[in-house]
Structure formats: C-alpha cells, structure tokens
Figure 1 (cartoon, protein in one colour):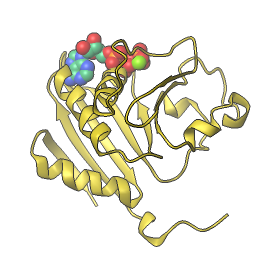
Figure 2 (tube, rainbow, N blue to C red):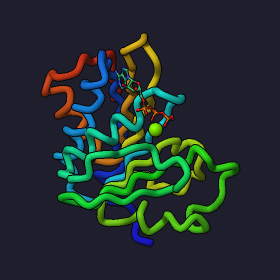
Figure 3 (cartoon, helix red, strand yellow):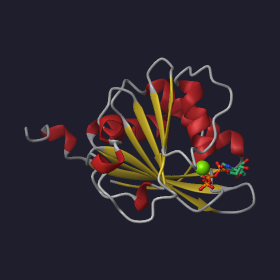
Figure 4 (tube, rainbow, N blue to C red):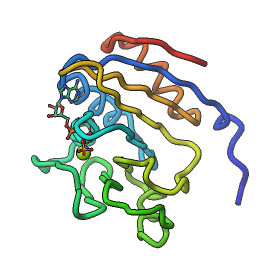
Length: 175
Ligand SMILES: Nc1ncnc2c1ncn2[C@@H]1O[C@H](COP(=O)(O)OP(=O)(O)OP(=O)(O)O)[C@@H](O)[C@H]1O
Ligand SMILES: [Mg+2]
C-alpha cells in the first residue's frame, strides 16, 4: 500500500446547528454538489436524528433523479444513479461488527461514487481514514447539532468553505 499523501494527515472539526429539516437537507445538498467521487461520509446518531434527511439532500446535490430515498433498513445498500453514483448504506441491522468485505460493501466504500453510511459506528472501522464523519444530536424538536469531523484535506477544505458560506450557524470549531 502506498502511504497517504502528506496533505491527508489533517483533521478538523466543526459543529453547526440545523434549526429545521431543510437546513439538514441543504447541508447534504451542498456536499453533494461539491463531491467529485470517492468520498466517504460516516453518519452517526440516534433514531430520527436526521441521517436519512441528510442523504436525501445529498442525493439532490448529486442530481439523483429518484424521488424517494429512504433508509435502506432491510437491505444494507441502495445505489442511486446521479452525476456520480450514490451508495446509501445503513448498518443499523448489523448485529455484530463483521468484515465489510464479508458484507460485500468494500467495493462501494472504496468506489468511485459517494458512499453515505448511516450507523457507521456499528460497522468495523475499516473505512478509509480520510472521511467526513457527521454526528447528529438532538438539540430540540426541530433542532439538531451536527458535529462534522473531517479527516483528510478534501474534507477539511469543505469545512472551511461551509464556514465561509454563513448558511449554517456555527457552534464551535477546533483545528
Ligand atoms: N433539523 C432537523 N434536521 C433533520 N431532521 C429533522 C430536523 N428537525 C426535524 N427533523 C425530522 O426528524 C426526522 C429525521 O428522520 P431521519 O429518517 O432523517 O432520521 P435518521 O437519523 O435517518 O433515523 P434512523 O436511524 O431511524 O434511520 C424527520 O422526520 C425530519 O423531518
Ligand atoms: Mg435513516
């Protein structure tokens, strides 16, 4: 294996407030527009926190024409065609951490499209170290705190640009 590029050894976090569903959708859409392929988005948080809403926005940003995007709860993976392929993975039903390879998900996680993984914390830590992890927390009926942790230059640059857009209320950020 080739060692990661030096610029990929960067990590940064940013917390933002989503004050309504549309705000989470808009963040997904923004990321979908920015994606160039090969991104891994690990989505973590309790039931109903907004992970699937985020993926719905992501699909829009990726110009997926499919209208109905739901959690692929009984099937582990749903693929959608868009500007880039969207691999929507949900590990909620995973009983124990099995090898991604055994699940047959590796080719998607390392694929050319954009992989969005709900309940990523239930899976084994075999995801690429360069990834964007978003942790969703309830902060009120319609409010969610989204903690974005970027590992890798591609994702830290997103965090900088997200901050610059001023579209979301930034709660804090650490370098
Ligand atoms: N700020 C917000 N961001 C996202 N969703 C919100 C927000 N406020 C309210 N909601 C509502 O919360 C629900 C989130 O549901 P969603 O299916 O996205 O959750 P989930 O995290 O995917 O849950 P699960 O683990 O069951 O798949 C939706 O009904 C959505 O409209
Ligand atoms: Mg879901």
